[in-house]
Image (cartoon, rainbow, N blue to C red; front, side):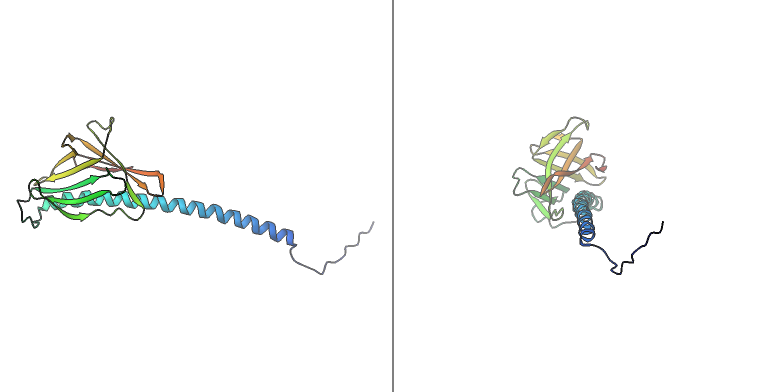
Length: 187
């Protein structure tokens, strides 16, 4: 039995094949775009957490070197970080020099990066039971430095937890835990 094959002179793809291929490429591109956007937010949080760690180190380094600051009203006592989130619209994040009570001189306002803010603050004495706070002050007293972690009423704690969030996606968070020994743990 002989089968005659007719030679097809039109070579190429049909419209259906092209449409299916384009749909598959569009779906894959959409998946990639979603993954890239999620990665950007994670990177923003990592950068914000590292920046917070750098500000804590800067306050410690200023205290260790005991850099003189212009304390025209009083004597320089040390340096610290004040975090106040009592008003969610206006967060106060400052690196300051303590020039003796009641005057604090703001050295720098902390910038954690675009789209990153402090979600919550907490203090703990044992690292297990955390108590939420609106204000946390981490203060470094020279020369060692001696580190104190206080809430808004001046009660001392052994650890502070700072939770950062992506402003537009509050479910994405990153924790920074700082203790009285100067250890910074970013989770």
